[in-house]
Image (cartoon, rainbow, N blue to C red; front, top):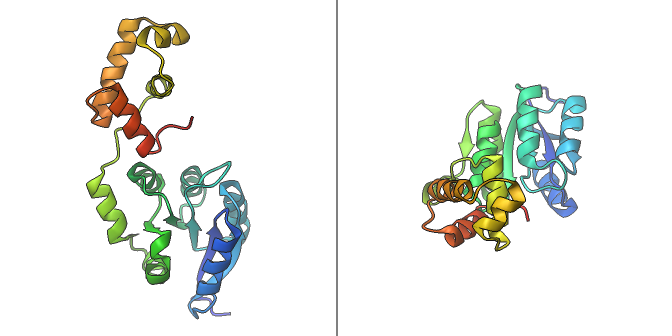
Length: 208
C-alpha cells in the first residue's frame, strides 16, 4: 500500500450514498477509503480506530448529526480534517459546520465534479469551500446565534402562542417576552414575529 495515499472515512446515513462515494473514490490511486460510518457517533468511534486523514461528513444524520460530530472530532482529533458533503441548503447549517472545524464544504449535487479536487486540496492542508456554498453563504448570511431562551420563545411563537401565553409557560413577564421577541427579530432580520418564524424554519433553526 502506498503510504502517500489520502486515507478517507465516509460518514453518511444513506447506504446508497456511501456506496456511490466509495465507488468513485476506489478508482483513485492516491485515495484509500478506510471505512464507512452511518452517523456522527459511528464516525467518532471509527475515526479513533481507523485514524483517517479526512472524514467526509454529511450534516443531516440521526442521533449525533454532522455538525456535532465535526465539533467533537475537531476537539479530539485535531489532525483529522473534515469535508462536509451535504444536501442542506441552509446557510446556517453550513456556517455552523465550518465554525465547528470543517476544512471544506460542497453540496452533494456537486460531488461527481468537485469531490476529488476538494479531497486533494484538504489533503494538502488547504481549505476547500465550493463556489456554490460560498454563494449561498453570501446570498443568505447565517443568523446571529440565538440563546436557549430565545429558541424556546421562537418555538412557542411557531405554535401560535400569544405573548401572554408564552410568558405563562416560561414563568416570566409579557414585557420580558416582548423584549426577547424584538431581539429575535433583530437577530434574524425579521420585521415581525411571523417573518421571524418563517426565516427560522427556512434556516433550519427550529426543530419542532
